[in-house]
Amino acid sequence: MNTKTRRHFLATTLALLTLLGTGSVAASEKPISIVVPYAAGGTNDAYMRLIAEGMSRELGRTVLVENKPGANGIIGSTYVAKAAPDGTTLLMGGTGPVSLNSMLRPKLAYNTDSFDSVAMLFDGPLTITVPTKLGVNSVEELVNHAKKISTPVRYGTLGPGSVTHLYGLLLGKNLGIKTVPVAYKNNPSSLVDLIAGQAELSFATPSALVEYQKAGDLKILALTTKERDPSFPDIPTVTELGYPQLISSYWAGLHAPKGTPPDVLKKLSDAAVKAAQAPEFVELLRKNGLTAKGGGKEALDAQLETDRQNWGTIIKENNIVLN
Image (cartoon, rainbow, N blue to C red; front, side, top):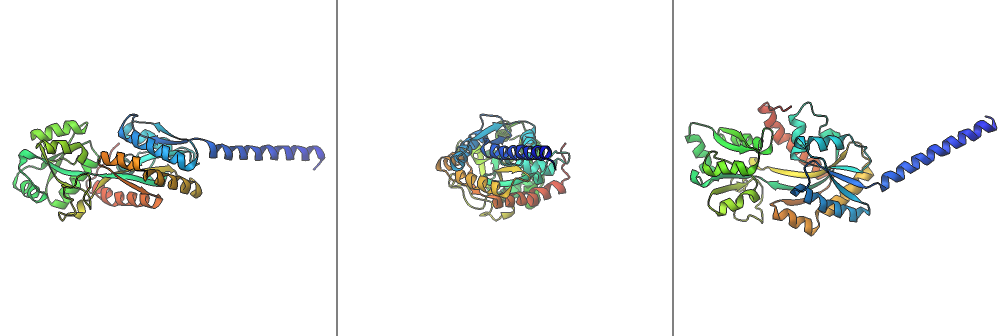
């Protein structure tokens, strides 16, 4: 190799190393974005802004919230699934955007294997609720009522493939009663029909129902949890009532694009868990009937597996496919 060639080789190598080093430094200093697949201004937005603040303190880096709403969480989830796996783009995933969409939509551009789990953040219970005028005061009485009538029990849902839709099928299967879903655009419209007796059953969250129960319009028969919720101490759980197979919840966690380095995932996970334990975050969740989890990668992996076993079975048994 002559002198001119050697100089050219050394200069090219140095330039390449400089570029690689700069890229590495840029990735480590670039702000971290938590993509929320819902519109700004909602409760999910508020939760993630507290998590972002907490993670920023722990990591010593800027952590931002970026809203990418649309298509039942698919737009934001797809964006993160295709992002660079360098730890700078995370997804606020949950029951619907990641877990259920992956099982319900075969043509989806991503699935649960498109992500690495970062942390479990919180979950919340559903309820088994009836209109007061139905005259049913327990799950056992609900079963007796359902078996006496000639038509299936009507229950409100937030649309095909939603947690409320699937839970009605789960409940019918395990209680041995016939149920039929009635889809609504939102909870308030479904509750109007429930109170009026146009539907007989709801699985809406306790925080959405508690005022109606106080007014005497609705009766919450049970929470879909193992232990009683301190925010609703007078409401029994399905476990207490002898129906542990009806335990269910909706949840939220943080995901990263598949292939994110393990050491990066660990730092992000530790920071997220710490942020989820902050008193102001725990209190905000409590006010909305939710429970902070603050679990790492293993906790989120376990939740995804539970969803596959519970919701996956119901989806397959009922041949539910969404486009």
